[in-house]
Length: 336
Image 1 (cartoon, helix red, strand yellow):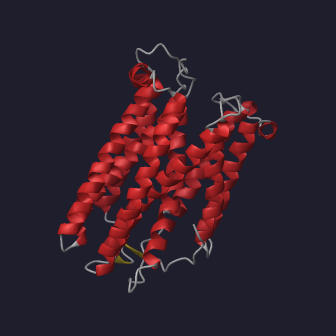
Image 2 (image 1 turned 90 degrees about the vertical axis):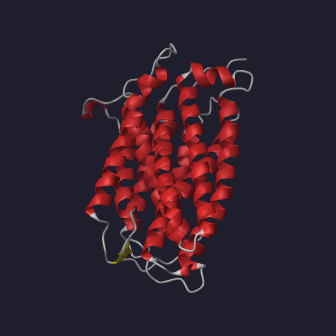
């Protein structure tokens, strides 16, 4: 993704300088709270009857990872849609306000909390004395955790600067660190797994973060033909992103659970159950995206496609929450 000069901001849904109404803000808070319940309450449900045991604080760690994924998706998706909008001939100059100024500090806080867990030996620290910041430099996981903390710190500084687009570089470093963290050196062919996760996480972030910003841009350009063109371009690229997410997701699942045991482990392990829930949600998202695209083709007003697209945003939020839960659950045993 290339660097770009920041777009003229200050407009948001409903017109220039207008902030979202209280109903929309309240709905966003309610949906965020409901999404947070998935990683918090999900571990006991996923683990029930499997005979597996989760590490202490699994729900909290899953929530922190979900926050981290959101903090990655929002700015990357905004930069992605901004690039699409800049290539539209005759597009209005107004752009929605960036949410990166809120998500980058949240990502920094989540990464810092996760780093404290790593410093305490992958246990939830109950006091400052249990946190060994210097010890993070002595382990691979510790160095990756520090890279994520520093990456979000730099991204937050960039988000408040005159050139917020440069935050793409520290965020790219966070994505790479997360891909490496998910595949330790003790794993068979860890670089292959990291490459799959790198592509999967990047495409998912562009898809999940780009759609909300595309819809906000659409509302900031009421009645302008560039709105339909932008949504159409996003839909075409999202199709490619979905294909990449599907391929890398399937390959990663087969690495965790070989095909001979896949169906069994999808229902008898906590990881498999969470993965199955994620697959179902992604299928729902794909159907909503198809519905929105069909409505966009048939309707004269691009806002007609916004209803299924808004539902798609909600479903994508659930996918992110389940992904946070998935990373916190114990990995299944690789049967042979």
